[in-house]
Length: 89
Image 1 (spheres, rainbow, N blue to C red):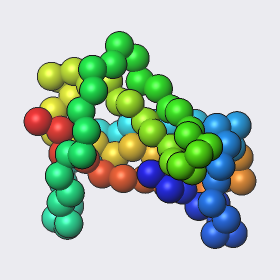
Image 2 (image 1 turned 90 degrees about the vertical axis):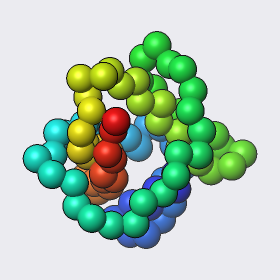
Image 3 (image 1 turned 60 degrees about the horizontal axis):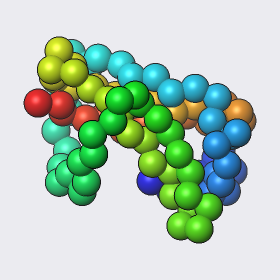
Image 4 (image 1 turned 90 degrees about the horizontal axis):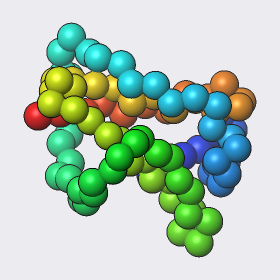
């Protein structure tokens, strides 16, 4: 994912990320759905940054108990927050 800070500048370093949180939502908002592009097995959740492509990747380890609506929130050192909602099955 590409991420911009509060000034619209593309964030290009892991050091800019101060926290990642996952929030359970009571319901899923209707909206555009995107298909899963890639699925990988991971032992822990991990954020990486590929300098060549300028892309962040977050491998999110989920459990069956995580099924339902979730919001992933990433906060940056300039207090910018970006979020995305997911329906986990």
